Length: 72
Image 1: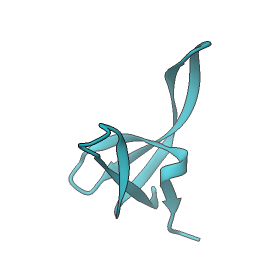
Image 2: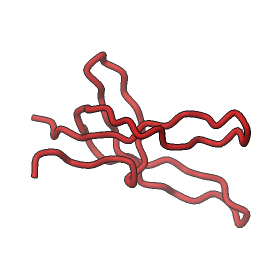
Image 3: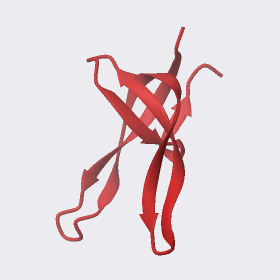
Image 4: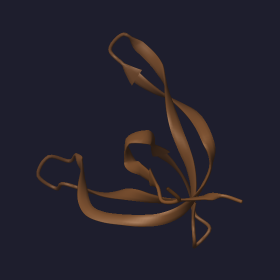
């Protein structure tokens, strides 16, 4: 059984071209933790990500700061 999570949603700010939170949340099912890499000035670094599946079947890597577990 998967754990229910709430995921913070983002939109692109047209003025800055950056992702900004839009105040909305989407529920999904947490599958497991995964790993991606991100480029920094000093070189690549590993980043822990949550693997989340939405009700429509879409699967996304989500940053740990953008999910909240709903079962507690």
